[in-house]
Length: 397
Ligand SMILES: *Cc1c(COP(=O)(O)O)cnc(C)c1O
Picture 1 (cartoon, helix red, strand yellow):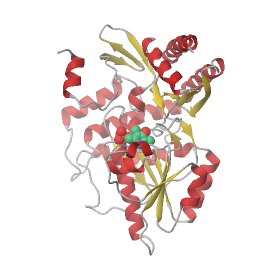
Picture 2 (cartoon, protein in one colour; picture 1 turned 60 degrees about the horizontal axis):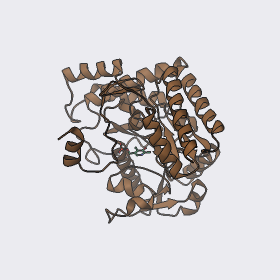
Picture 3 (cartoon, helix red, strand yellow; picture 1 turned 180 degrees about the vertical axis):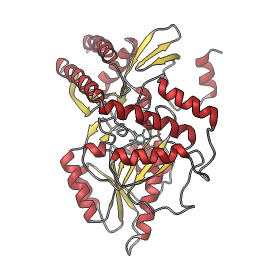
Picture 4 (spheres, protein in one colour; picture 1 turned 90 degrees about the vertical axis):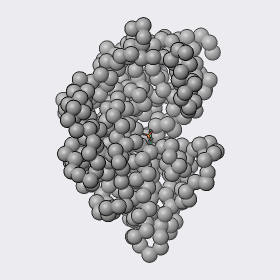
């Protein structure tokens, strides 16, 4: 059996997998078995934030692995405490953290915090959580139910109660009642189509929720860790959420999730936990990722690259208005809304043939989540290849 056959025989068919075998990675460039290069505008779906084969991150991981990888949360974990301090200081929020292993798990924890808050605060028990229709919050049963896309709820029931879906941010207020304990949103819907929420509307909602003692949970699993130019999209939107969840880009590829909350004493020992969460290895990786990105942000190179990338994407939208409706997104989380789902599939296919990796989001959005350390040369090369793909698709429609 070749590798593809082995994979098909022994691994569940959960993904529409592309059977390319990447052997090596260098920042935003991947190399296949024949040594052919691919420009990576996906960074493993927003995960490899400081690029493939990052020397500082791999060194931090190796050094930590040779020493202690894991001891459990029953003992002090030096890199975990330091990571929590760093995230609080960089965010500017007066919060404490809990560490998990993924986005879905961080969101589960956030929902538990909200549910406990609704139980102990006030006279009636509050448990309802409002989320948005095109949201994505993860794949565990509860995170899936929190996800407002009904198509994802076809199987797997019965689900936990208490999730209510708002069509859009404008209709959230009308859904609040005496049993509502929280509103959970992504500031830029990632899977839903790279659609940023309107800043003024988010600020208005945040203010109103605070007045009503309803918690605001911001799912920053995709938007967090400098993806939009600030440590958190919440910083960019100038709001103060009660709970923020993180994962994807935080560990540079090592699995880690985190919950930040201003409800510093909500959990007592025994309320929540994780065996692996916040161990030496993942926290060492995350500390190094933050050191790298904080430095790039301070030196202005992160913003420079983001603007450069945004300009190139906007050029594509303008030049090929026969294919694209518009350019969407913020920072290094960008999308080109195609005129149809069919065009979208063709562009993704042709892009791959031209050796540039891009993602799909929603029904008809091409999504770009490059490593935050991508070089101008890589951006230029990737856009050049992407444009070739567009021209091929233009000929077909
Ligand atoms: C990817 C994602 C998740 C799920 O994260 P996992 O690590 O796959 O569990 C949750 N919320 C958002 C906004 C995401 O983009």
